[in-house]
Every structure is written in C-alpha cells, then in structure tokens.
Image (cartoon, rainbow, N blue to C red; front, top):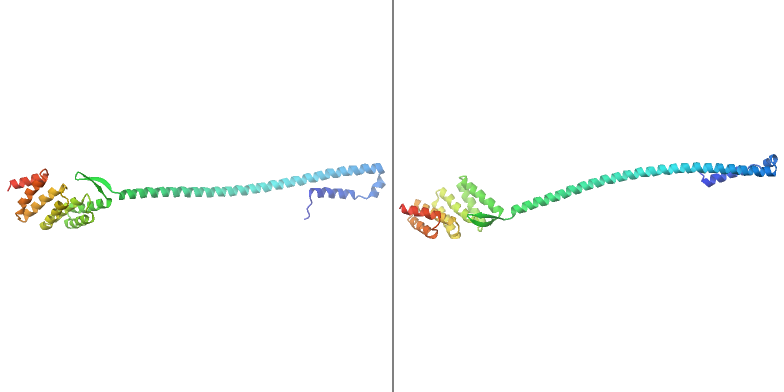
Length: 251
C-alpha cells in the first residue's frame, strides 16, 4: 500500500487542482474572474490540506499513544517480574542469614560443652573437661548400680586416661572399693595404696588407708594395727582417724 507524507498529500491536492484545463477557465471567466477563481481554489486547497494534515496528526498521535501504552504495560510487567525476583532473593538472603546465625549459635554451644569447667571436688577447685566428667560419672554410675566388675574396668580406664584429673584420686579410691565389693582384698589393698602414694593430699587418702586396714583384718594380716596407727598419725583430724581410734580401742 502506497503512503504519503503531510507535504506530499498537500502537494498532490494542489497539483490535482492546478491541472484543471486553462481553456475551461478562459471560456467561463475573464481575467479578473479567473484570478479570483484560482485564489478561491487555492484557499480551498489550503483548507483541504490542513484538514488532511490534522487527520494525519490525530492518527499519528493515537498510534504513538497506543505504542506508549503497550511499552508501558511491557515495562510494568518487567518491573513486576523484577520485584518478584527481588522478593525471592530477599527471602533467600534472610533464610541464609538465619541459618548462619543458627550455625554459629550451635557451634558456640558445642564449643562451650567442650570447654573445661571449674568445679569443686572434695573442697578443692578443679578444672574438668566434659569428656572426663562424662566418663567418671558413667564409671561411678556402674559402681552405684552394683555392677562392680564392669565398674572396676571403667574406673581403671579412667585413671589411665585422665591421670591428672581432679577426679583421679576419687576414681582410684572407688576402684579399690569395687575390688573389695567383689571380695578381692589383695587387689583392693593395691588400689588403695596407689591413692595414698599418688594423691596423699586428697581427702580420700585417709579413707583409703582405713579400707586397707579393713582388708588386712579380713585377711588376718597383723599389719592392720600398724596401718590404723599410721592413719591416725598422718591424718589425725580426719573422720577415718576417729574410726581408726575406735577400732584400736576395741582391740
């Protein structure tokens, strides 16, 4: 389909009107009338041209407006899509930050559980690692439950694994008691002697010496009396020494 510009359409109209035969004008009008007719025709052509241009402008404006509206709708759609993507990214970022925070909280909690704790054992401050606390409690739990054989193994393992533990003296003492509970007095005496030798400042040392005397008595060992006397001498203010005095007085 052929298209024309505004100026083209106006020129075409002028050309069409100007092509009227001159002899027709001459036949109908004299010179003045002819000139007047031409002026009138030109005026009419100008009106027609303006009308055509106006119509072209209106049509062009409508088309431009429609194009702008279509572009605006497309742009709004893209903006909505980007907003949706931003919301998804913001949500993912928030979740990632929460997971990271939870991770660090969990890690801090785990590390705190692994850190040594300051506790008091038999009146003395001691730093105890969570693993040794767990092992000691488990071994002592076996003893209290009456499983003396298994308890003896667990207590022996504890002393071997944690020789410098604040619970080491207690573990060695209860090891001797676990042997005694199984009527193994020789093993019980050996275990309690290690308490006195390795942990002489422990409150359990006096009790260990009293237990040694008890085992010696059961074995009818005359060294029991000497052990009680040594107990009173080394730990005179202990409750074990008071018991030792009672036993010596009863002899």
